[in-house]
Image (cartoon, rainbow, N blue to C red; front, top):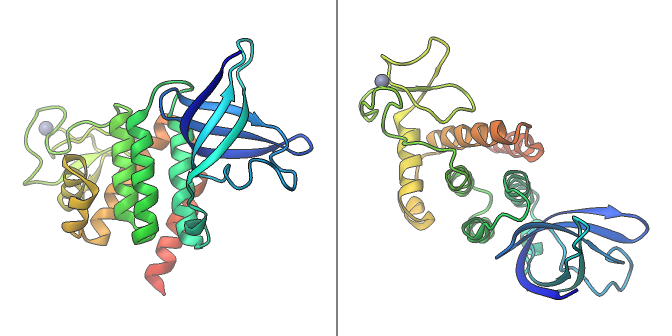
Length: 253
Ligand SMILES: [Zn+2]
């Protein structure tokens, strides 16, 4: 039974038995893996704080042919986001990143671009706080990497450019329609929101920051992306509600 060494990001952890921890992590090469860290909840555990959510670690684990769960032998911290977790709003932003990633990725499907995207988003939350700009970028790219996003500038039925008129879509569906092709129940999405989406998908997060997109269209495109992700995972994201409640709280205060 060979031991495997890899870089990983901790996605979620759950208490297991007396002092163990069940850990879902993203192996940089192998994709999402679940494993057991024996004794990780005991005082003086050799895992220390390496298994906190979104910790970027080096991990050593044993694969067992007959079981789904690997056995985590050792882990070392490369980069911790514990400092970011101490701010409540930022912790909610990080929770959204980890919950989405854990839900959208298939088990043991290589997802290196998603690995880099998580690190980028977590570091940006450390620098800028849990800004909708960061989360819109993260969610749009997660949906794109999943193959669930289409073009944001053309009607998906007739191909007409959406840059001039209003675009329409049905909640949870990526397809955008022009006024002529839309179904009666489709709801409008602003061209400002689609522009933020296009900049996000056409370049880097730095470039999106430089555009300093306005709050309302950024939240609109974030909500569009979150609806698509929720439809694909067939459930509501727990941290989304907390995040959106916190966001509206900030606006009111
Ligand atoms: Zn059309």
